[in-house]
Image (tube, rainbow, N blue to C red; front, top):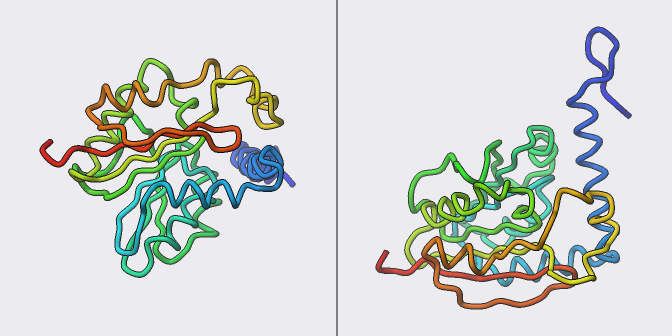
Length: 210
């Protein structure tokens, strides 16, 4: 149900919050009910472990952030970042005790240099405007400590992208994002690449000497 403002008109925040819930449902359906399996695999590939500090870029409603929070307990913390204030509000209501969430953009992260052990991002790269995607990868590099890991996943460059999720959001994705090229250009050392259901992923390291 849409929220209404004090004048009785539909609230934009309410509509957006409903969109957050709808997106959560669509994503679950798009992966054939195997969303948890997929995101559990993403969590494992990130290498997040107890005590780590993790940044989840484009966290949406916080689904991946909650799995990462379990992986870094005890002693670790997860910060989720998204451009949508309603999504961040949704995530905060469901957050684990070692999670925090902030509104922000990938190309201008509100985080200190070298402040994270792991940066993760799933189904967010295609939402970053093409003109600033390289800046976003530069920011991911900046906030990772030397030796820290980047795990980024997005749609695969194949016909299998015609899922329910991609149909509903058609026109925003465009071509598949060249994750490996962007990571390498930012200074990362790419260690692994592969496919996950409808997605491809890249795992990369910020070199120790940098």
